[in-house]
Length: 188
Image: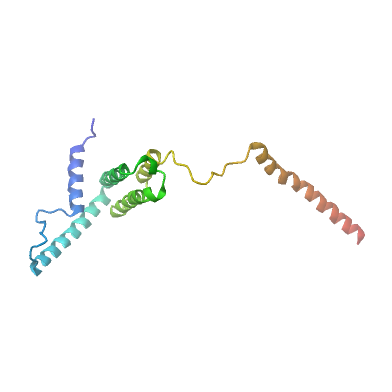
C-alpha cells in the first residue's frame, strides 16, 4: 500500500528532476553541420538564466519541505547505485578484488552520491549514501582479502601477560623508590 499523497510526490519528483536536468520545451539538438548564429547564443543564455532561477526556486522549495528533498536525494542515489551496478556487471568475478579494476566504479559511485547531496544541500555523508556503500561492499567485495596478512590480536594468555606485567611492576617500583628515599635521608 502506498502512502497518502504518493501520486503527488511522484509528480513533484518528476517536475523537480526535469528542472534540475534543465529540460524545457524549447530545447533542441543542433546537428554538427548546421550553422550557428549569435542570436541562438543569446537565446541559450536566456534559457540558462531561467534554469538558474528555476534551480534557486527549487532549492528554496526543498528547504521548506525537507521530505521532498529527501525523496529527490533517494531517487538520485538510486540512479547512482544503478550506474554502479551496470559498471560492476562489466567486471569479471576474477577481477572483483583487484583495486585497480574496481576503483573507478567505486569512485564514481561515491562521487555521484556526494555530488547529489551537495547539489540538494542534503548533507554528506548521510545514512543513505553510507547504506549504498556498505551494500556495495557486501555485494561485490565480501570475499576479498588483503594481499598482506591481516594483523590479528594475540592469544589471550599473551595479551593477559602484556597487560598484567606493567600493573604488577608499578607497586614494586613505587616501593623501591620509597625505600631508596628513606635510605638517602638516613645517610645525610
